Length: 120
Image 1 (cartoon, rainbow, N blue to C red):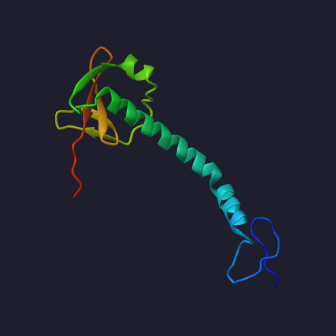
Image 2: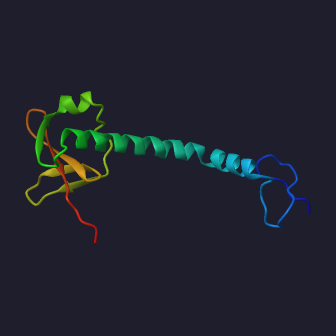
Image 3: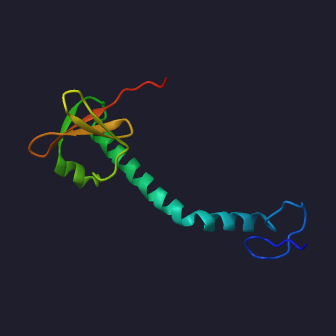
């Protein structure tokens, strides 16, 4: 039985389990296979990293800092993307982008915080 490359359909020579004629075809096949989902995930991860960087830049000491919503928006912060939400016993809802987060306050102010967690 003649085996053909999964990417270019040329005959494959060599090992019996070989699927591609060379590394270029293997890379091109895998890039094509993953391109749509990879772009979607990459865009989300880029937005999450940008949000984290903005929170870190506006709160470099990691202590509670108040900022206006307009300042966050001016830096390009996207409130639709975050990694987790935590609600305290008192009912305050903190939104986090990795270890950096914020709490919505009155009059369009946000309290920026940094969670100091240690890995167990």
